[in-house]
Amino acid sequence: MINQIAVIGAGAMGTGIAQVFASFGYETILYDLNQDSLVKSRNKLQDVFNMLVQKGKITDSEAKSSFSRIHFASSLAGVKNADLVIEAIIEKLEVKQSLFKELEGLVSESCILASNTSSLSVTSIASACNRPGRVIGLHFFNPVPLMKLVEIIPAVQTHTATIETCKKLVDGIMKYGVLAKDTPGFIVNKVARPFYSESFRIYEEGIADFATIDWALTEFGGFKMGPFTLTDFIGHDVNYTVTESVWTAFYFDPRYTPAFCQKKLVEAGYLGKKAGKGFYDYSENSQNPSPLQDENLGKSIFHRVHAMLVNEAADTIHRGICTLEDVETAMTKGVNYPKGLINWGEELGYDYIVELLDGLYDYYHEARYRVSPYLRNKINS
Ligand SMILES: NC(=O)c1ccc[n+]([C@@H]2O[C@H](COP(=O)([O-])OP(=O)(O)OC[C@H]3O[C@@H](n4cnc5c(N)ncnc54)[C@H](O)[C@@H]3O)[C@@H](O)[C@H]2O)c1
Image (cartoon, rainbow, N blue to C red):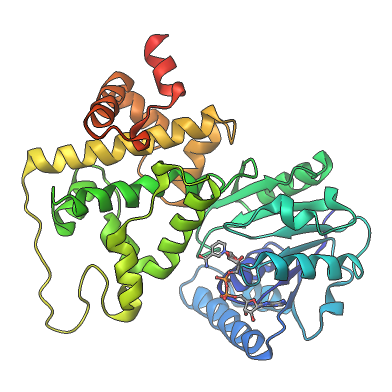
């Protein structure tokens, strides 16, 4: 039974996670080794609860009681009574392992230790512990209070009881919990790769400029933002690092090869909106390209990127990383795709997708375009 939750790391993710659990009635301890981060987090939480009251989303007394359930700890020992600790600190394996070791010396034997890592192996984190059966990945999405998905990632060592408790917990905070095998990028960060990388490839090959590709994917795909606008928004340093880490961790599988056009932006410091420049220019009076609104070209761009996404989702099922149902939930709730990819693939026709990918494979002779056996079996069955 989980009553008290401790969150370690009071940055963007930790602050959001604490807000959600406190709002659902959990006594929540928030700890950060940096006092400034803790103060900023406290101020941010206070502002957020005030804002929710102003917007009429919660009452003043709900805001006060939620905020009062968050206790700001200035030492790690403050987490000792927690039933669940969620770590959201810096993304470095050695630092997380050392924190988990230290935590084991403080908390009860039954306390679950969860990591919010986006890219590290949960199994490696668990391997630092004496009781690795209680270690699990709980991957929340940013901004945590708004994003409805949590990927639940058991390590190889994780006990079934730990998984079951976490599933119930995630249900209880009204989020969709999906179960993912401990593989690079888990579900969302793996399946979403072609949205960026195939679009970058189309751009690098001069098939279309970035404004046209963005237009194609929003106009014909119904995505809220095109890949160039979206990566400008996420930050190229962040997005490139995820791509590079998935590519490296999958033993340099060419399906995940990063794009030079993005690497150069990172090297130039053109990190996107936050830097005032990425693919687009965000300075005052800037002149950005307008899309060439050619319907045939737009549709062909959408179909190519879409086929790669469906293939990636299919392969995630084929490799047993998650179920069909969970990949659909993950992509619609974790990154707001307009439709689940497998259903969407069926709607456009698996035979059409396989034919398109086989055509690309024949043309490029690259393993990047290999069709997942999952799709091939679908059209042969
Ligand atoms: N930002 C995202 O979009 C996102 C999404 C999902 C998962 N994540 C993962 O969540 C984790 C945190 O990311 P973030 O964006 O909140 O980072 P952040 O930089 O905003 O916050 C990290 C906080 O951890 C603190 N910290 C660092 N080392 C610590 C330690 N040893 N003990 C206690 N506190 C420590 C820092 O002072 C900082 O306040 C990372 O593992 C990241 O990969 C991030």
